[in-house]
Length: 376
Image (cartoon, rainbow, N blue to C red; front, side, top):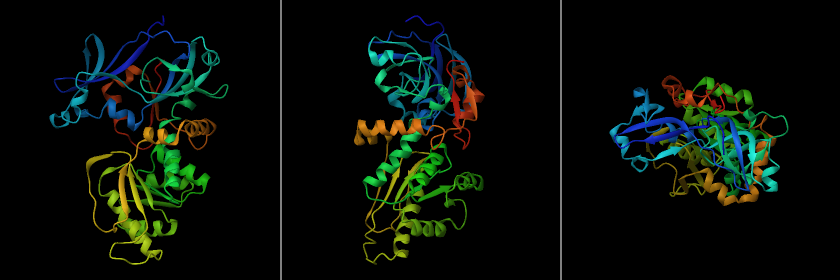
């Protein structure tokens, strides 16, 4: 369809070992009968988005260049990282997991026509573009008058927080442990657990992060940088009975610390001694890689434990469409409550390829969530 100045962002790993983020013209296709065209007005930069945007790059080498006639950000990739990203070489990929905007064109179906002019929240990738064509059934309208910004971050983090609670209940646990817990997701999980009366042990790395969560109302917020972290973790786990952890750090010894403390907490709660350890099931799921090093495990937690990976998409497939839509509608209802997101800055597609701005959003600093408005 004819839309002037439509653009999109691409991310490419080149054969000669460079990362290229380029902004290029976009020919918006005509929507099929069951589809709509959403003019994108609010797209967050989530840690999961950075996996495509900047993960391969040495950010100390970023610079502005023109690539194939298009403005671009270019950065070198360490040769040792090229093995990991070899499958991406030469592939020009679109990025952006979720976002929100106004439906400006619609196909002939009743469902599509009903969305014309409405502001909707959507998920499905390829969101860093001025316009996104989507199936009408994948668009969730915001209430009349709600700005797109309120719908920008209503999938990845809110659905993950609800997914953690789903997993807890499905596996028979009664309380949770969460690391890197002052993040945007961590704050949502804290509010959700308070609402649902679920005990939560939150692990952070500074006094500033601890205050964020205690101000929300959490009782058990532990600073892993303190000398008394482990005894305090054991006490918190004994008090809450938390036997399920979600770890965003991934590398290093955090999963080991949590499992060790869970076993000691079980003994403190009266678990019967055995040479095989307690019969309390202890589980840690790794769902992020803030530390990209090896995960180091020990031997201090008996034989009834597990460490695994957790991803949102397989979880949603497991719970099914009906439950997923319940979760999505709950996020819309709580968009200014449990699942409210604050943004430290709002940038354009062209800003995304500015070297200084890219260095800033790549840091994933607590309290520095960036919103992209492709319509700027």
